[in-house]
Length: 97
Figure 1 (cartoon, rainbow, N blue to C red):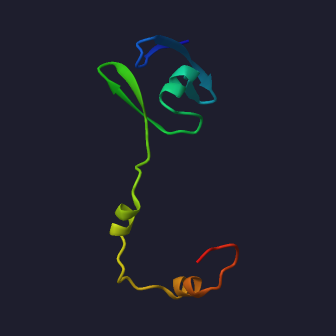
Figure 2 (tube, one colour):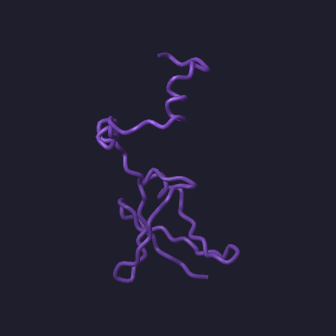
């Protein structure tokens, strides 16, 4: 077995064990580290080797404001027949217009 020492911001060292799972190797992360980084299962992380150390960082999706999203839109773009049909369709549920 291979052991890794993991340090997080309070400086407390955590040790975890790499385990073989199928054809891959799994790194288990103690709950205290997950909580400190606001991570859980199925969150994406990035990994890099830096000066002989494995660094694992949260991969956060960019957060855009409505203004940033609208700035990417072209108000003069042509609307397809399918889009026009959708826009002209009557409300189908509890929408407030």
